[in-house]
Length: 259
Image (cartoon, rainbow, N blue to C red; front, top):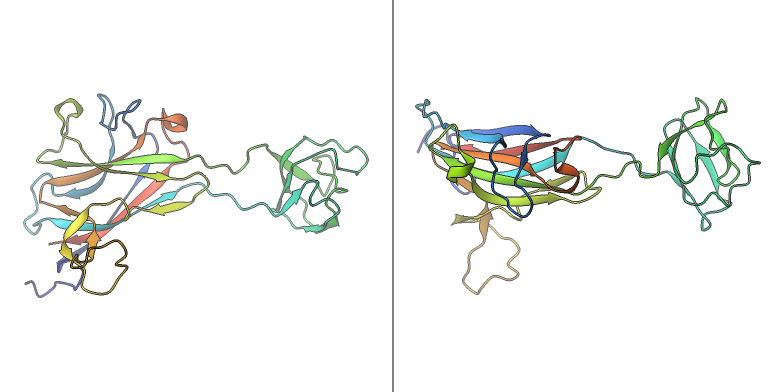
């Protein structure tokens, strides 16, 4: 055992591993298939010395993968609807109101853009009753119309692959092996992939949630053992809004260790 090893389950590691990659146009799959198609190129997340050029790499383990969207939107501060009609409000710059119904507005015919989201752009505090505020860009203490679906983040699916013994995997040759898929649900900022990662062979040393386990079944970590020469790739599934790429982008982070 190396004198530099650190006590990290499921085995002792010599060096910590932390890799990340941003996924935007790295589309993979087609229709109902998860396999990488010709001309597609998923991004490399972890390279376990595919070039076989390092003397101190005997493989490693990934026990944590996190996906974080690159776009974020603040929550709505006020909702203007029949259910909230007459509610006192107080705006400061940057706060957002969602107008669900325009028929309840009573400010005297200001040039509203209609139902949708409005960001307050005035420099001072704007107070009043929610149905009597002029949600207009034509006044000094005005608003900016953000549209009817401002802040909506669509669901996005990511696919993870493993390769071995090659630095130039060929889709048609089956070099890309599907590890797992993970969806970032709509309007969710980040997700952890531990629930869909493979179960590791080594039992967990410690207590945990035993619901669903057999009487003598051990608790186990989830993660990915990698041999030297392996790589882990990731791409965004070609469906819905991501058919030609994921414009907002997401960072994928992997943590683990080298043996």
